[in-house]
Structure formats: structure tokens, C-alpha cells
Image (tube, rainbow, N blue to C red):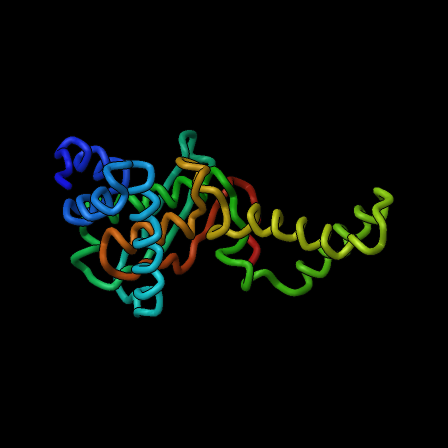
Length: 201
């Protein structure tokens, strides 16, 4: 099956994937762009999982100061090589992540970083709320677990919906970029400053 060049171009613009990958995806999907996007996403996630364990010793520290100079972010994003760190795409990713942090105000990078005392307090609150609403005892644990998942999505950077594209999480975004750049990418740390606010260590 021959694939129209405009379809390949369209798919490349939508996904950022290479020409050969787009042609293969369109061939596999019989020219269906939506199915080709799914194919590329699945392939990208598989590629990202293979690369996720590799060391990321290069990268960038970027800063973002919001209009009005009352809110700022410092962020370290790592990759495997200086070559990728210097690309416009990687720098754009880092700036986009810094802007996301300014807008979404994550408190932690990932759920494993949440102190157990904070987690226990949230569980107590969620359990009390569930009991107060008169839900049967048999479903209380499920309710608490569901509310905890929402809590993670609010406070953990990797689980937040990306402000520029809420259909994907920050973790998904990194997975897409790992597939695109061909090397592992990780967020190492970030700090968000608001004028007059005390930053907790």
C-alpha cells in the first residue's frame, strides 16, 4: 500500500515522529491517521520503557519568571548527552515544563516523595469525609483510594495533566520525548518561588 506524502507530513506534525516511523504506522493502520497515532504512541511507550533505566548525566537547568516578577521556577531536566541538551526541542521541553510548574504548583516530583506523615493525614481527612457522607463501611477504602489518586494528580508533577495539553500527563509527555529524542529524559528537581512565600525544605 502506497502512503500519501501529505498524510505522512500531517502525522509527523501531530506526533513529532520520524518519516520512516510515520510511514510504517500509516501502513500498519491502512492509512487511518487516528490509528497510526495510537500505533506510534504504543511504540513510543515501549521505546521509552526500554530507555528509562539509562543514566541521565547531562541536561539543563532552566528558569522561568512569570509576568510581574512575583513568581518564578528553577528546574533541572536531565538527558543522556550534551548533543540532545543543546537541541531546540529539548530546550523547548524544559521551558514548557518550567511554565507548567509555575501554573500547576506541584509540591512533589512523584508520589514516592510524599512524606508518610502527609499521606497519613490526607488519608484521615478522606476517610472522615467518606464517613460523614454516610457511605457504607464496605466502600470506604475504595473511596479513600480514589481520592488519593486525585490527590496524587494534583500534587505530583509527573501525574499532573500537562497545562498545554491536558489529555496527557507530564509522565506521558516525557515518554513521548524519550521516543522522539532516542534517549532517556528525567526531571531531577524543581523549586517554585512566590514572592513572600516561605519555601519548605
